[in-house]
Length: 336
Image (tube, rainbow, N blue to C red; front, side):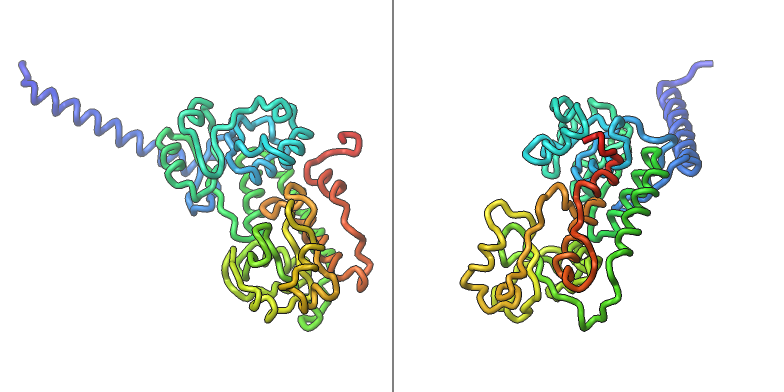
């Protein structure tokens, strides 16, 4: 029997469709039966048949979480900014590969080299959800992506819990989450709303830059037992000096600032008359690495702010950052 070229073409097309349908069905079944399932910050479900073994992590705060989980051996790529300044120095104490700058840096918060990411053959990429184009390109290569976006301190808890599942570290995730939440409970909550100290948070960009009610800063101040005077709803807000005088906070808390100290704020002629300035209640968080709000290290600034606000009213001791970091990074005294 002889068949025309058209008949052969139709035959192969039908075969191809059958194969594709079969593949789609198998993929769907695999997703349903996957051993590990989480939902990332896009709301997208991520399914893995087994824990990730080769991770490209392009977010420094998430990388910190991986080290807290003790799964740094799975990391094969890191964000480029880890190799700069204090961040590099602190990670150098945790990983000889970072000390020697031997880990590849295929991207950062503002740029991703698709070629480098793909060449590393990761089975998981961790990236900001705002990097939509990079995510789309990576997923085209069937590389699983866990996308992150932090809007609250509770999001930090979710990220650690999810990473614990993805990296086979659920027990360790439970340990450090339990420790953090227990420590937060020890901070006094018996003040009435009327007795709460009020605080203005100042970012490093200047006295006009702060955060409002829908922000990680709001959660930070709430856990510290003080009230955020900024009644705006922005994650990052720019206000005028008149508004700050209207709020007249009991204290001012500064993000770590290399160019400005509390003394500079106290001596600023535009700020004279503020209660926090008159009473010299202006404080600066000591280190961006130690006080990273987007990691469980947010516990340290919570403890510090509470201590600054209420040191004369309760028996809270000044927090020890090294002790806290040893617990979070699972280091013994002798590891230092």
